[in-house]
Amino acid sequence: MGLFRFSTVALIALQLTSTFAQDQAPLENQPGAAKTPNLAVKVSTSFPSSEIFGVKLVNGHPTQALLSIINEEPKPVNVAFIGGSLWGPDPKTNGESQRIVRNLTSTRFNVQIPAGEKESVSYSFATELHPQDLRLLLVAVLSSADGTMYSFNAFNETISIVEPDASFFDMQLIFLYLFLLAIFLGTLYFVYKTWITTLFPQKARGGKGGERARKSLGGKKIDPADQVAVTGADGPAVTSGAKAYDESWIPAHHLQRPEAKRVKSAARPKSRGKPEA
Image (spheres, rainbow, N blue to C red):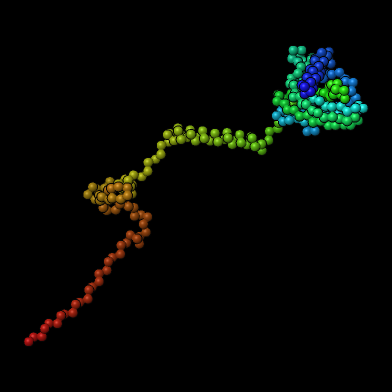
């Protein structure tokens, strides 16, 4: 029941803040013009990592808002909720009034701030919008010692919504580039093997023995009487009985065949006959 009660009160407080902002005059119609509560509390907001050259909200990255709350009451107060919204020009009124572009997530807190003390509360949110300038309204809902709820405008200024900086060394981008490159190369290989190779047929290798013999003879015709059948690894072939090879590249001393020397056999001794009787 306690959680439901706090949620209901916080929602009503945020809605009252938005409604009051929309009911202002055209020149003063700014979001977050809520009633000043009768509670001695001061609330200020800073953005530790987003205040370089103005507050910038990076799409897809959480933005941290640090709320500093000073309790000047004689009794402790409790931080119940922190929420907010983004406002932009209303096209129906040609920008003279503003409308809610996006409501931010409300976060429940249960932080008690003693009397005279200061407390910092961190509130994080994220955006996914087109780059533009909008007005950011942050509202803190506090409860006094007797349980009365109060809403405070913690922040109400113009901010810029920007896209994250693209880095060449981003692992997600590197993986995406490699994936697209693999698809591109695979497509090129498929096209080459399917269509390109058919346009350029491969040259036939040298033929079998007979064809190689004809090439070695320079294409000269061979008299069938001089052809000799040759059987090799490539099958039967026909070559010339004269010369079936080109002698121009063979050294001369290899072409000269050594002559076989004849060796005279030793004379056999005459056999001695039997002596005559």
